Length: 249
Length: 294
Image (cartoon, rainbow over all chains, first blue to last red; front, side, top):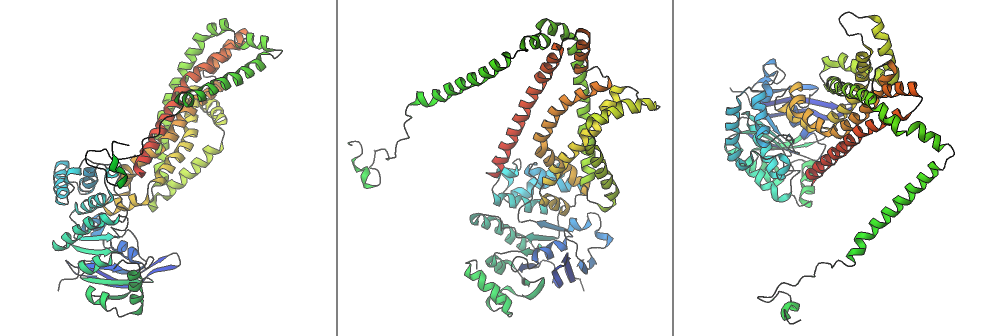
């Protein structure tokens, strides 16, 4: 049997004495979209960042296609080539043009020639409606456009898994739609994604599985329709209640 | 008003210009523009006039003027002092290059985070502590007199060379800290983004962090450039014939201090444009930041 694309097995993480991830296990199949929801400080972003080793965890294993991400097969840039991430604050390189932002990793890490990298980048950019902005600098773009460039940048290395860390949280409400549209499209194309989000409506629509985290544990995990309409745990109910009161669902 | 009778009803009538309050009329334009200028000019004249009168009314002023502001002595001293100033400038330029490179090496070593770099990081911390702790003048004396006495094979023996080395070593400790503050000011997210794209720490430094860091610290570096230009005069204590030394030589021969004023004027002629340039760079940098924030 083919192993799941991502398999998180008993991951525990402390920041100093504070337990942020408490024996978390989660499995993500190929082409599956998993949304992590929960209050701030519930550990969802930390869990996400463990998957591409931006954060090192203390106990447990994370396997990508059945092989631990700490295995030497994923050493060097092996893991980064397979797993891309998009951040809340875009984190584009402000001193580089859009084109240079997108081609930096293909050229310097994966040793693609400048010509080939730029052709691929232009193709991706126009696919995501940013074709006219290849020469622009990040500060000349809107937040939504910057985030689209950031998504293109993470796709430029052909990852098999995309991690999205609250990618709409810094955007003005009218710009959120254009970014979410791209994520829907990536889902349709079969990208495996793990998404941390506060957009419950979006999570309900796009996720195959939703996980509710609190205090570093996955308290409830399931089909979005079921989890949002009839949560089993009182904690989940309370969280969703607060979201509804805030008018976000 | 007969032009737009319906304007009071809300939407302007067809053909009538929409009613807006007129832009504020500039009242008393002449007075608002000229009066502050006149006041500034008068107060400048008054304050500087009073200061000038106060100094020149001193009992010893005529003697001081002869000793320090003697035009004939200035003209006589000028060629020698200018030659010395040429030496100052060439030391300044070569020290700048040395400091720029060496401080960057120190800052990078101090900022790299890989664990096996720890001993080198520690060395840089100790280096910076030592060289910031010793006065530059003392370093110049130690290097300028001490090392040539060793007669090291394969290295130049001139006080000028070792004096300049002392300047470079000392200034680099400060400049390394400036570079480092620029590196630290680059947002953590830039490291995270680079790492998740697969860039090594070194590549992150070269492609992502340093270009931003250097831009961050350019105004601070310009100030160092100006300060260094004057501190080069310290090398005169080990006998380097720079502008100050040449001026002193003239003074020793004639008992007239006007040559010092010549040296001062030359330094000012060089540093004031540099300082203006530094201001300009700082302003540009500020505008760039504001633009980004807006």
